[in-house]
Image 1: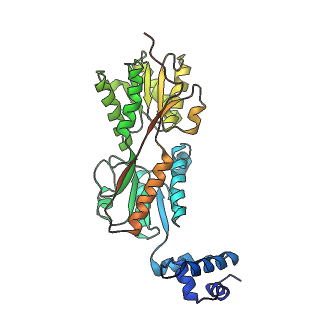
Image 2 (image 1 turned 45 degrees about the horizontal axis):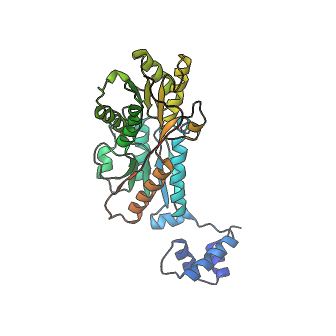
Image 3 (image 1 turned 90 degrees about the vertical axis):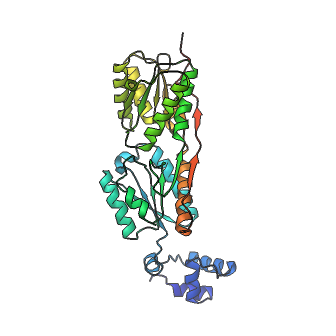
Length: 340
């Protein structure tokens, strides 16, 4: 027979209402009584009926996390497991569960978000992507529902968000190549529908301008955030400008594909072509050659965005907050000074 709240109350020598208050984390309960009840709950392996509790309190203690695409593709990129690890760490610390949702298309993502919000399945939402054209823009701007985004929105939506300074991050990477003497520097971007892509492209342009190098849009190739995307983009880039000596690539997986393509075309990295990636994924230190990359700290992004959404959940009258997580250029062997 399942253990009931009355069983817990009897063994703890308290009223069932006291057990309910402990479960609800009511501050009127003393720490001594709280600990006694929690100890008995552990001894009896008692788990509260959260569905019943939520019907009364209208609180789910659950945060929805909306992924930008299908899970099949998602977890091929180490960025997402790492950011989820950060989200889970703070959610667990503060007593929240995580509900993951994905969509094959932006329309499916929109339907998922509306279903979660209107169905009160979660207390707050974390969106793991910021798009240039956000189908939910007007809705997100008008709702009071706690929502936080990983990525700075292109337009002010009145929401919490956390991001890297992606303009500065790309500037650092491009500046490093320029200081090594490179002047014909290609750029392999992610899809232009994402704000992160536009910001990093601005950083690339900013560094070129500072060093007096003319921006050439022919040297900017768009690709998918995948190894295949980087492989194809490098092929297109070398076809446009075979004399290119360096490339800034907006993702490590893409950089792995770019290195592979360069090798297939008889180029030696970094002797013939220097390459910089983004994310500092674990494999970036083990590819040949080890990849110079911009560390963006996805674990910290996940932690901070969760702190922001929980703050909005528990303090709904607070003003939305924005925050940046710093970046760091990790120097390895995929770049070298241009030979004169």
